[in-house]
View (cartoon, rainbow, N blue to C red):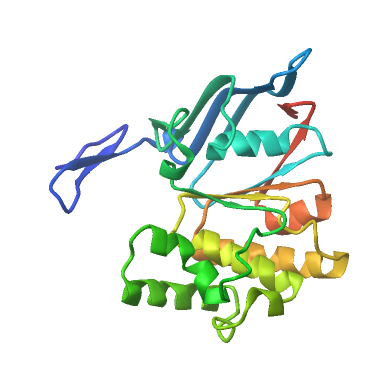
Length: 240
């Protein structure tokens, strides 16, 4: 079965029809998004943001602390409920979709790794929760270790790693389930300047080689230029 013009229909393995959205709808499309936090008065953290991120693109949200970039990222992944607007992926509205059903990954500033698990155990945690079989899980963990340059570290304890190595593990853990979109919230800010500069380039290459669509939040212009293919500045809850 086929379709032309606006989209193409293909047959899934189960025989159901899946329609590829037109190019204008592919990837992430945010329209009129607002985030308001309760208070007296309420705080408008994000105000009417429109944003498109194409498949495979790495976009940096650059701005000072308190400008709303982390709130925007949190609304996109589903951690924060928007007060206005919509979020769509490949033409499907996911504004009200629970965070665990969006197929998005998130890397935090401190990595938030499990100290009682090995490197491999951390990377495989999400795969294990998803019910992936042991053999397939181990193969995927091995691939992720190779991707982030930690092939020999699978059995290591998290406490034995440097700060840069821990962030690589956090990245591998987030990439292991093959997320549709990876959100990185100030992922390198806890590292020293020299290591941050090196790892920024490494993360960009890892994301590119895996074909991952990503949004990176940062306050550092140098880091934004090193990591992203497109930079969007944000100030006072709006994109500039």
